[in-house]
Length: 520
Image (cartoon, rainbow, N blue to C red; front, side, top):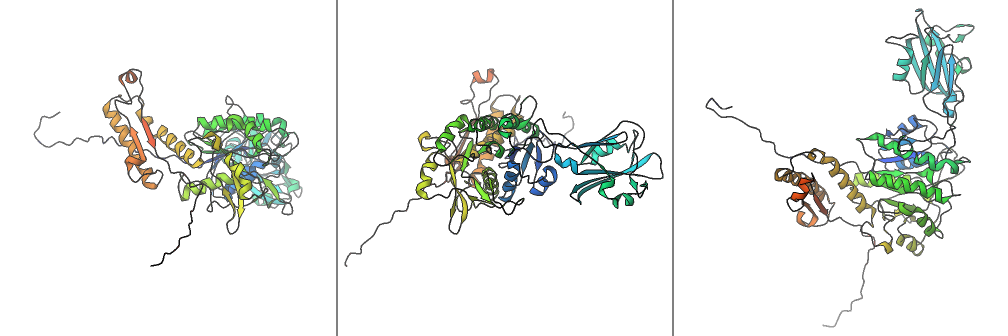
């Protein structure tokens, strides 16, 4: 209201709502592990964190080796989904009316030991939880002055809040019996710390269930990995990470059994459909019985999984096994490829193909050593080959999607182009949420053009598109031509975004001609 003469300030919205790019190489691994929460997507940012939460390498877990390869080759963020069969069980034990259970299923829980110390206060006690590897204590937790009755230090609540090893259920108000030390009750924490493992209460009954290299895995692998969307299990546990995103998916456990490639392909087909819905990219492992001679049959079996949102790397890799240094271990290449995607994205950008002399593989060498002539038919079928070259050692020597076979003539021939498109689509889908329910008219269209144009211009300046000028590199159109009155009446806003991607120089041709000098 203006009633007094003077100068008044009014702030006018600029219409600028910057669009942030989503991540490009967060990688999801779905498989069996020796420990950790089941059917829960857990974010880890290092191999050390993976070891602490999921037990690290397990001889019968192919996926654990894939996670290790991912971090060795440059990976930084992974979403780990542990799946388990019906036989998996958590170790358990009791001290009087205090029931204790390992936090997750697995044999690992059988290594837990519990000690109790009574203090001067008759209402409180101290509990020591140890995890042993043989006679060595590898992890330890202490809960001081907890109570068997409801209150600020109720044992159930304290353990639930602080423990990574056990869950507690106190069924009465009586505190549990103290550990016997030299024939007497332990009364201090120091006495517990000096007590032998044999004097503690041991948890028992832990079971891993059927793991990926165990007999019987082929019969349960499909249902276990695929899971259920209704139950948010298997690959569908990744629906829990919203608003975070995953960009790559690796399923090493889907390719470790080679008695039924059709079952393996069915897993990849469902995973591919899930990735398409989530703007993600699937990296497929070849089963152990797939080689150059029968590669065409495997590609046919993949069916719908052989599309623009997937890549297949061949051959499998062999390298030192930290769990058995005397016996090399063969692993699928998906974890390696995902790590190199992440490393390349960080150093160069998602538009740079993770292939070539910079894409050096750490932790393995190809089991099938190929020449240029031998690679040719595999490459033209859309399969990326891992090769060993002098000086450069083992590198990825291919950058195609499974839709990139020459016969398909696909516009999504290269995985760097497809992944750039997925990055743009996901970023715009998330960055334009504010537009929903805004008045569908020219002021809104201008704001959309401004924000999407700024986002695309930033990518162009970073080298994501062809063209010296923005006009040649990308197009953003949102006006009365893209959104007609009929669209407005239906509540529809149409935004057209086009871009000219940079494609890898897959074939470099050098023409040499002998020139003769003519006489003067």
